[in-house]
Image 1 (cartoon, one colour):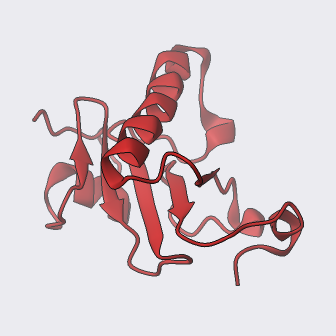
Image 2: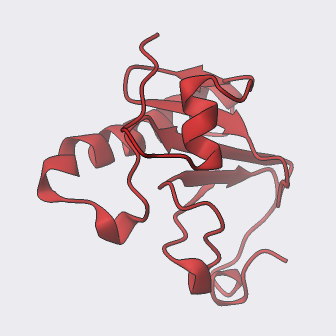
Length: 125
């Protein structure tokens, strides 16, 4: 697979995507990779990381539209691969106050436990 990151990107996720930090990809294509979260909030907790370094969702540009759509389609493929297509949650934390700790856009796929709408405001702790 093609492994690239934009220049000057030195986040943990950029290093994982580039192979500088070894990680087991549970999914990989030309636009993104997926890994298991090292601090899972549910029995299934996967991170979908674009190869292009975008710090936050709010930093995405119009030219990122196809990539953002691709990430959502990748979520569906990963959910199918993991056998969780009937019940999973997709989360994007945008900014430190929203819980983002690595400033390289990524999507959380969370499954394997029951969620309620009320949990959206309380978080996952």
